[in-house]
Image (cartoon, rainbow, N blue to C red; front, side, top):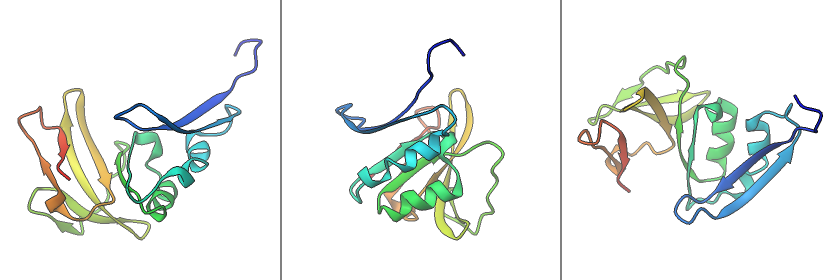
Length: 139
C-alpha cells in the first residue's frame, strides 16, 4: 500500500459497444462479488452476463439468476459439481445449492476450464472444436 487511499472499482460493461452500464466504488476490503451485487439491478432478462471465476459463488450465481439474465461464468478449478444428467454435446446438468445449471467444459489455449451456464437447453449451444476447443455460444 502507498500513502494514498486505495479504492476498488467494479464495473458492468457491454462487450460489443464497450458501453459502461454501471460502476461501484468502495474500499479494497469489499470483495469483488460484494461490489458486483450492487450492479445486479442493471441486468435484464435480455442480457448474457460473462464473468470470470471470482464470480462463481453459489449465492452470487443465484442472485444473477434471480435477475432473469442468462450467465456464462468460468468456474474455479477446485469445483467439481456432480453430473445429474449428461447432455448429447458432452455438457451436463447439475445443481449448485438448488440452482439448476449446465456445466460446459472447454479447453482454452491457456489450459482447461469449466463454465457454468444458466441455460439448460443444450440445443442453444454448440462446441466448436476447430477453434482450439473453446466454447462458442450459438444463440
